[in-house]
Amino acid sequence: MTALTVDRVWKEYGNQIVLENLTLEVAPRSFLALVGPSGCGKTTFLRMILGQEQPTQGRILLDGVPLAPEPGPDRGVVYQRYSVFPHLTVLGNVMLGPELKASRFLGRSFGTARRVLADEARAMLAEVGLAGTEDKYPAQLSGGMQQRLALAQALMMRPRILLLDEPFGALDPGIRGEIHGLMKRLWNEVPMTVVMVTHDLREAFTLATRIIAFDRLRDRPEERERYGATLTKDIAIWPPRVAGKLTHFDIDTPPGRDDLTLDAAAAGTTRHPQGA
Amino acid sequence: MRLINLRPNRGGRVLLACLPFVLLVLAYLIGSAVRLADNPNDKLLPSLSTLAQSIDALAFTPDKRTGDYILWSDTAASLWRLALGLGISALLALTLGLLTGILPVMRALLSPFVAVVSMVPPLALLPVLFIVLGLGEVSKVALIVIGVAPILIRDLTLTAMALPREMIVKAETLSASSWLIAVRVVLPQVLPRLIDSLRLQLGPAFLFLIAAEAISADSGLGYRIFLVRRYLSMDVIFPYVAWITLLAVIMDVALALLRRRLFPWAEMGR
Image 1 (tube, helix red, strand yellow):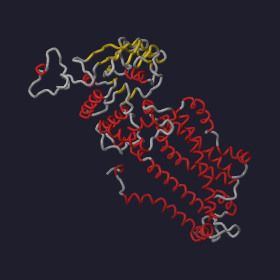
Image 2 (cartoon, one colour):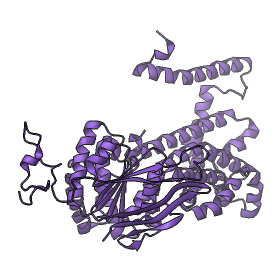
Image 3 (cartoon, each protein chain N blue to C red):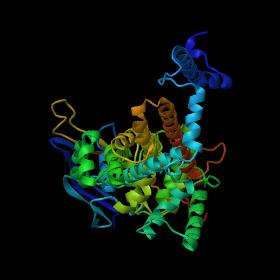
Image 4 (cartoon, rainbow over the protein chains, first blue to last red):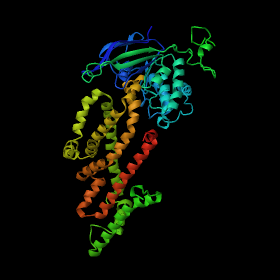
């Protein structure tokens, strides 16, 4: 069972080969981090999963079914910027997805349906730490709060895959740490697979279950046009992180002790026992 | 202290803002007094009392022949034409601007056409309009629409296209159809720009209105000005010009207020 299958995918713009021969299987509930130097096609790859761009060759399957050639509600996305709508309030932004889904002509809900939805939206906002900002506009929020809002807005659609395009790249380190905690919790609690593009290796290793590195193997000037980037490293985090379960990454280290194996319940595993 | 760092306070700003107006009025009064001292029958720069008499006759005394108050009936006729012309232009701009801004197919179909049409000098078409549409209200409104709509359409197309692609894709991931993207994402975000565009087009709209009224009408602000021109009635023309300017300024300010009231979010991003 795989959530996402990438099968011999190439992407070319005219003569320029950007990505070559990507093959990848992603397990459900993975948290995939895509890393690599600028201009190596990470974002292009993300856009292909999103459906915003099509592979030149090869195919991408979601739960075994070929992707529709355009973006849809099964794939949520959060960008570094422009992820939320400036003309809607915080609450309006979070309610927008379900409203669009339910009302295909006006794109608005009324009466009881609206109240139920508003309650759901408030719960989601509280979940991401935005309770009390419902009536503000995005321009009145800080960068970190805007990204929390973008996450809440995307999660209202219960996407099977959440795509993140350098979502926390523009945030201060302190804010970024807080939002990493939120991201971890959401990934643990919401049944979704996450694919994140990032420049920040530390972020990749903090959050992901698996790290995919893109690079150009041939990068001499005369080669640059005819050779694209491809997958150069595929690193599974060890000990494995499993969605919804604790690993020793998540155990609070008792003061004065750094040898976590002393705390392990049984030899041979670093996973915290269930129910402990 | 450098001049660039010298900032007037609130009172100073008001004072400075009034200064050019006061100077203009002073210049007029002096010019008028000098000319009238030379020749008491001079018609070019009438004195304040003559102006006041004319304004009273135009605005507050019923016309002997029709019983109308001329200034108000002229204003009503002109504003009605202007409102129709601008309203139709705004509606056209919204529909065509959104269509060409959002749908690449419609852009390919309509954009070059609109670009060429917007280059046709509207006043050159005026005789055609009078011949085809007759001398009534339709041809005057049509001239305003032909003059204003293409620019509004192109402006809204550009505004819609300037929305970040990310926002459109995000709406798609929230299950929006093309129609829903148009009405819930793009339309609300181009409306503030439509109001700004309308403000910028008020001047041209008045130009086309007065041009059409000057040639053929039986009421209207432009009609009156060009009617009394033959008698060198500066005592009518000056108040009318001032009145038209005031109307345009009021509309401009009202649209700005409307924008701030309706789209508070649009001010925050600035």
